[in-house]
Image (cartoon, rainbow, N blue to C red):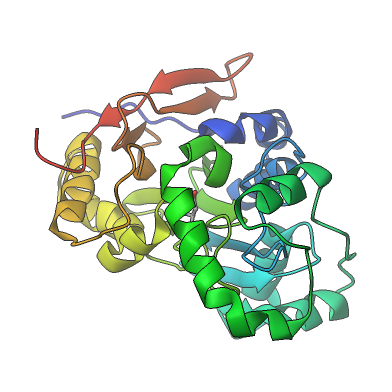
Length: 321
Ligand code: ASP
């Protein structure tokens, strides 16, 4: 079968569209997939209306915004990630720095913040009045950094989680996924999130975990996830898509199989309608995305296109219908 080889292409979760102009400009100028992916994600991190990524993200149970991000270079399988980072608005750039200048892949919490400070990243206040209000409406109380709150916050946490399950996807969840193939044919994948709204402090989802929420390998393709990160961790979903591609499945089959794998999970928190989503690209630059929701979309743009195109995702319900 002959494949059309697409170079200079970007695919992402629907919210990534705000980052496409910056990424496309870099690609058109012959820039790298890594540069384009970081530029796109950075723009989403700066989008104050997006309550699932960067500044403006929904905080944890204590009212603190904690960010996670990861990046993977499909040429070399180099990867960088940060988790539970407070006060730094561009975790994707810190993740890139981890990949480029350390012998590590992942830094979390205070250590990641210390690393960011050493490398000259500027701290900022990430909690917007809107996100604080959303937090207050569900959790109640005052935003605080006092650790004594931990003592009786377990009850609060369980209540918030119960309430969260009832809330709409767009209000509480959110992550951005960006996969880029540059004009050289190199692939990079970048993910950034404020995680599960009202999460327990220190909780990491799939987004900073290479293999769970992010994976890229020039030889086969790339995948990234949004949704209930615990599921993507348990199934290593992003890596699964790439493995299925490696084993010869088509892009659609690989995505479908990775989604079907989720059905094995016994998960009392997966009651929501829109629980898992994956965007993917094969090694030829063909793109597709899947979701447990029939309404979810993704966005794609090539360097030849004037603007992005929004497309429906392949629908793979979590339960057999
Ligand atoms: N996957 C993210 C997480 O579990 C959240 C999301 O995509 O909505 O942290």
